[in-house]
Length: 347
Image (tube, rainbow, N blue to C red; front, top):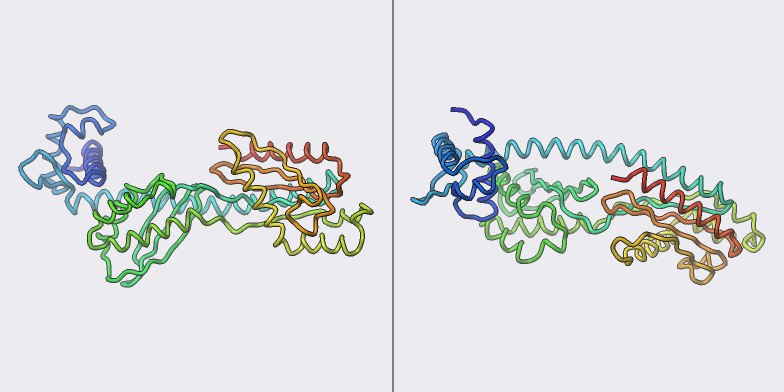
């Protein structure tokens, strides 16, 4: 007797239902859960075959079944093989896209500076309000396991977790199933105390690992990628007499070179954007003189716009010039590139 496609679907459905509820799974439950139409009688026959093959068990005289270790092993090996390939493919794609994006953003900064004759900058996109897509625990040695966490935007984070006692492969695989069943697709706010308590109960003696995994997931979701800032045209400042004073110009040029203060401008602009109501179109923000969050730019006007690359990945681009800048031309340039970036990376 072999495990054909129908038996595989029924076995997967039994395991998923059992992981979610903790209760033995019966044929009537499966008939509602399966994506193929089978009568309860047919399902019972298939369940009998699966029990005979050793993939499921009948814990007592009820009609419900639970997975055996052999059933868990088949399910986990199949699922983890697919997931490992997915993580590998995503990692390659992210590296490739990151290299492409870096070159693109440098071009955008130069284009803005050349087209306006002002100074320009653009930040790499940052992640906000991420959700967990997948996690995998792997044994490193008797005292440590590695948590590989994939969050929205296909960003991969690794976290080493200490364990009080060695964990065998079967235990890790069952924990992987438990965690992915309950946490996949959830935001940090949705991974609440009640849910963690439930998972801990089902993890039994390994409940201490669940708390560490939850902290690792929280760190991955909260963490933005390292902020990269690409600048161009800083020397254009010298074209404007009111900014060409040695002290003023040197201060602005220094700000562009060191980039630390530019992060304040980017964070404030993105923060204002996140405060917008859902669905409200991102607009142009203008800081005139003392309105600027950067001290060295108090004699300038700073115009910013936020762009979005999908999966809540947002970055900011900005043009810095004299207060008498051509605001209409600047706004048009930012708006055009904003729309082009949105279209280019639209999902």
